[in-house]
Amino acid sequence: MPNSTYKGRIRIRVNGLLVKDNALLMVRMRSPVTNQQVWMPPGGGLQFKESMEACLKREFLEETGLQVEVRRPSSHQ
Image (cartoon, rainbow, N blue to C red; front, side, top):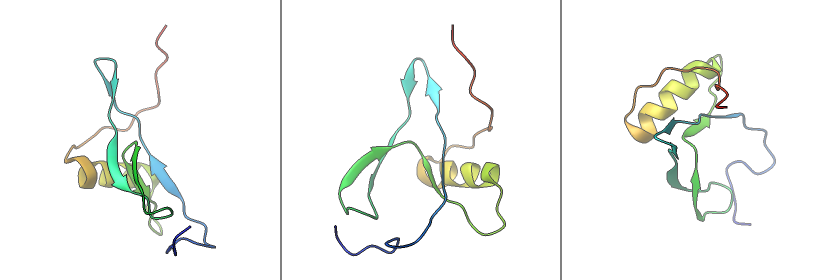
């Protein structure tokens, strides 16, 4: 494993799932742990005194340019 800023540290990451027309939005990024390209849901590190909702909105905007409304998952039956 390459040297990592996060090695030996606890980091809280907030992710969100955006589903539209039966498709899941993913972003391609370089893993800070493995340094490899990976696909994952938009999200990122929680900042000190930041709510999880605020973190998720900020990360979606930074990574996708989208302003989102945070809701609980709904069940599709």
